[in-house]
Image (tube, rainbow, N blue to C red):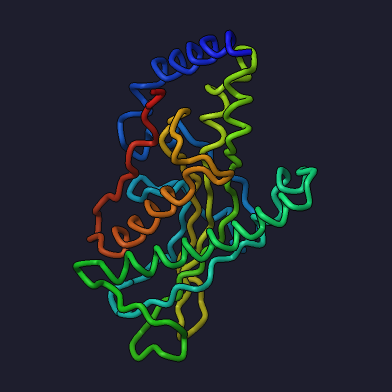
Length: 257
């Protein structure tokens, strides 16, 4: 089947060239073209009030009218919810019970990683916008609670990569690379004193397309890199001034070799 691989490569290059000008602009508009939002899961109680905001890097967001973040000095980062990840169709379509157990273990590890990266990003923020506290009982000043749910990570395994290169045009790596390098989350911000939700947001993001990147040969592919980016964006949003725009980095770049 090796003789079919150049066809897949040509298709990938053709798609990349045709979409290059939009995808490489490095703006929120570019992301809107390259990545469709994930379906709502139920983690956010009223998702319909969310909209796409030009000043934020996330695809959906809602902020309570009149909400002022200035009085809040502390932040609690809750454990990351994985309930909706465990409901993914592809996970339950796996034929091997061992694979399912391994993937469930990986999901728990990824949730811990996401939580720790968010905490790390706020602790290393040179502006020290929030003091991160470990639990609600430890806060001393007005505090917010950041609640996150991982809702999707597309599988990206060595086997899937190999199959994507071997298939006929239209089923090759051009399709697989774009569709299997995504991750999505939903989030809520809660006033820790009152319990009121003051903001919600959701995002699906995509990592660099690198079909021959041998450092990413796990089922969750580049998910950790996407989480790193989200963690940094949370800090940027916390620090932004009124009217300031936080843009999303380049959605993806082509690196076929």
